[in-house]
Amino acid sequence: MQSLPSMNLKIKYINEGLFTKLIVHLIPSERKHFYRLIYYSLLIGTLEVFGLFVILPFVKTVQNPSFIVNNLKTMGISVHYNHLSLIIMSGVVLLMIYIIKNGISLIHIFYSHQFSGNVHTRLSQSLLFNYLNTAYETFIKTNAADFQLAMTQYTTVYRDTLVSFLLYISDISLLIIIVALLLIINYQITLIVMGAFFLSLFFMLKYLSLKSTAIGILNKKQLSITNKLTYDALFNIKIVKLFFMGKMIEKNYHKEVVVLNEINSKYKLYAYVPRYLVEIFSFFMIVVGVALGIYFEKSIDKLLPTISLFMLAILKISQILMRMSSVINTMKYNEAIIDAFNSQEKNHLENHPVESIDFKCNICFKDVAFVYRDGQEIFRNINCLINKGDKIGIMGASGVGKSTLLDVLMGFLTPTSGGLYIDDQQINHRNIASWQQKIGYVPQEIFLYNDSILKNIVLNRELDYEKLVMVLKKAHIYDFCMSKNGSDTIVGNNGNVLSSGQKQRIGIARALYDDPELLILDEATAALDEATEQRILDEIYSENSDKTIIMVSHRSATLKYCDKIYNISETLWL
Image (cartoon, rainbow, N blue to C red):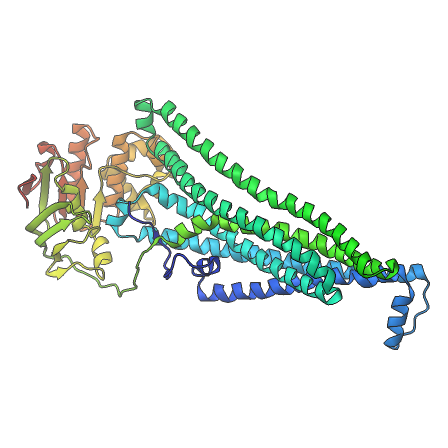
């Protein structure tokens, strides 16, 4: 399988740090926004610390009302309040500080998710745009289920990891500031308690991080397997039903989903383990901290505010570490998908000026050869002149290259050597769009959107009801439309409420709608009965005598309108 094309972004290294892997997908304006959010994350961390340490004056006020009175007097402020009033006032101030702090935190969370959501939207659109503009040869050799997986799962994982990273920055800044301030207040207790605390957690998180990374790799692989099973089953439903494959597919899907659930269960276990271990360590460290406080400071009255602050700090740190461990596990778990996202092959799309091309005289194949990238040669040394207005028929066994030849003619595939010329002007990336606008194409398999007949014919072109009625009549589908809900009749998923013949007639009407200069019919009437086929072909050929028509068919009777018929074999080329 070819590697998936990715968004139009520069990707140089795969084994970089997670930060680089994340930021590589951001455009300049998004990077500036991302850096601002990181700055605000650091600010939120500082506010969280401030909210924690303003508790200390409140505790001291409760313990000793003269504390706040004396501090205010040193500032030249005289107060005459009783103990209860001072406690209530301090509590109100503390409450206001926490309301403001938490309000700012919520705003930051909102903008972080909004930012990641906007990035997710842009990346999804970028992926879709690049997939639609992928070289046709690459596209047909790539698993469509992988496209779908990248469009849905990968971009969602990237979005969630981006938010997790911002939360991680906020938490780690908060952690550093709390420990630094605790060192200032009492470095002896802080060094002993926090040293043991962090050393224990470091080895625990290191172990869990490695486990989460390994499980994340398995998860990415298993997601791809289950997604492919679902895709193959849903898009081949007739084969599934005809060959009674339902039980086998259900069995295989069950087996793979069980494996996926086991992987997710292990991940959830590793995600929850730190929470309980941190809680155990936290209470153990509180007991140790109190014991050390009493050991270093004999006066319990002097020790009470410090002990209260340390208890709150340890509980806050435990909350931070719980969140951080969860975020780290999530990022490590998702890193395999981020790597897959990053390692996708860049689809090089360049903006070129669009050149117009005229088709007034002829189409010329000059020494055209085509070889697929895997070395499979389809044809070589094709030299052919098709004059405007010619009616060309092509016959040949399956697999000899008829459809590939049409793909070269329509510009989907570029000749390995030689060239395609329209009025002596070679087809290239600058004029291919102009050339393709002159082509009407009816493939063997007609794809229809789950929408109305009208929208399946007009597509994204300007609606002209007169033209619509005309092509419906030419394709002999007009009476059917009028017997239902007119052109507003819904065709179902890929036209599943229509017969094969009705689908082909809608495909013919779609190709005729723009009055193309070149009409290509690739087994376009194979699903029609002979009478309907003859009526449609009679109308197409009689009313388009000045148009160039190329028709591929296995039935010689279908090609009776053609001026030239080419019978292609593996050893006989045009």
